[in-house]
Image (cartoon, rainbow, N blue to C red; front, side):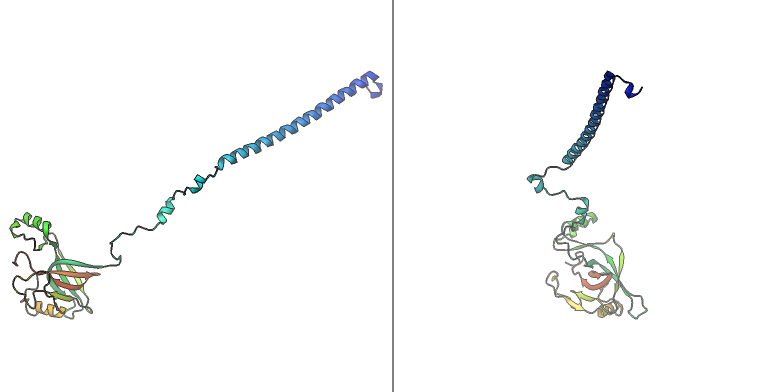
Length: 237
């Protein structure tokens, strides 16, 4: 039916229906726009809430707190210094024991000399008394004496440097002190290593320098000083 064929009342009714439809469309579009805006507002509000939760409030108390050290920080700290530990590069030690022999492995040229030592423990005080008691020799104990213990030790060899021979410190040879004068304050007699060696091997050890007890200063497996330890408690009064 054409528009012109409609009566006046029909035209008014159709116009009113179109107007109502247009208003409905406009209202629907407006409602959809508002819904989109609300979603954006909700998302922004949610984001703001998360950010506020993730960022704690900084107060004067939290500013003053120091962070806990991490494992890396702890490992990076310097090792504690141990007092009285001595120099780390110190290599010289003193070894106590019987002199068993001096060997020339170079065929007489003194290019390869070795000192053989039957190492022992140097005992005094309670350790010495316990040791003598275990051997049934407690009657030999004297608080002023030292006592060797070498049953559990073996012979060790130390090199003698050919260009820098050790010095020898003796207390009962070449000159024998007065009887009974043994102890601190004894005069140290310094002899050369060559004289010491000759007295043992060229004179058939008349002075019985072998098998005495000595202190051997050893540095990097080389002997630097041979020092007699006088007054063997078993044989010297």
